[in-house]
Image (cartoon, rainbow, N blue to C red; front, top):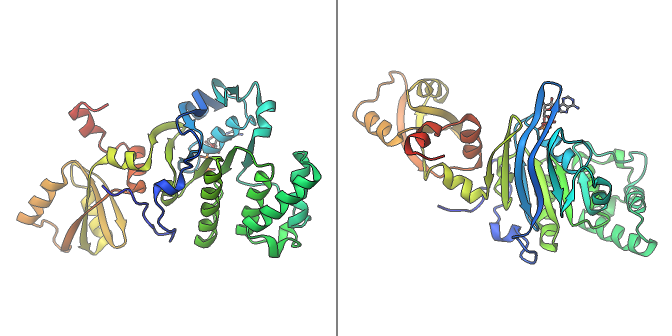
Length: 344
Ligand code: ATP
């Protein structure tokens, strides 16, 4: 099975996994360890007994739908929300009890980063550098470097409030990185951005990773998951799967059946009614099936096409992508098959 990242609908460029991991750091050392980490708000269990570890030098992608618990997890890891139960550590320090000691070691870009909109780009960078107490000469060097790396040089005198969404994000990341932390948390840094800005932010994350920065990034975008060294899926507060994109895809099944049937929308409705079909998705005009026995389905359709009014145009076998993996895990597809095969 190919492990190349798919270009996907976003137009993000393909990049080999090897290029996105930092080879200079020890990939085996756990930097972050979470043990049964839980957060409840009244009756809402936002984060439900999450246990996992993350190695140095990783780009860890934390994926989940709206309200899945991503922000709450990241806020606990950053010492901004107290765990209801369970615990976590970063470099051996407790994320809650020792949060003040940990704080200087990481950069955090929340979903809504509070840039000072009346200050210019340059003034924002100087402000955040000053807040981290960087000595003047170091601050000057880092501000210059950040302006260059974030493509903000020509906008340095613009007020932050007047920047486009993409440049605001780049400035937010620049401010979070001004003290050159070893660990960076980013909460949906690319939400709402166009493909060019998304690409720019990912190129930058790779660059930081190459330099040794460990990155924990949340996203809704499955094509971005392909670009991480490791991925965790969170669903209704629970961690439902974790592993490298290659491993997660292999855990699904070798190939999925994609059929070309027209008209596609009524066909999708009909195919979903078939016993043993777990799910049907429309992908570029074709219908991708998650089914218990796709070979048997194909054989039966070859013998007799039962859908009057739906035209059969052919089929293809396709490799699953991360969207398939997420759907399968979150909807519980294949659990029945796995149970039968004794897979746990
Ligand atoms: P999104 O992708 O929409 O940002 P998310 O995965 O980051 O979502 P969270 O913001 O962590 O999800 O929310 C998880 C659950 O916890 C949701 O049901 C949310 O309504 C709830 N929640 C989060 N913060 C609070 C709070 N301060 N008080 C009450 N409930 C909260």
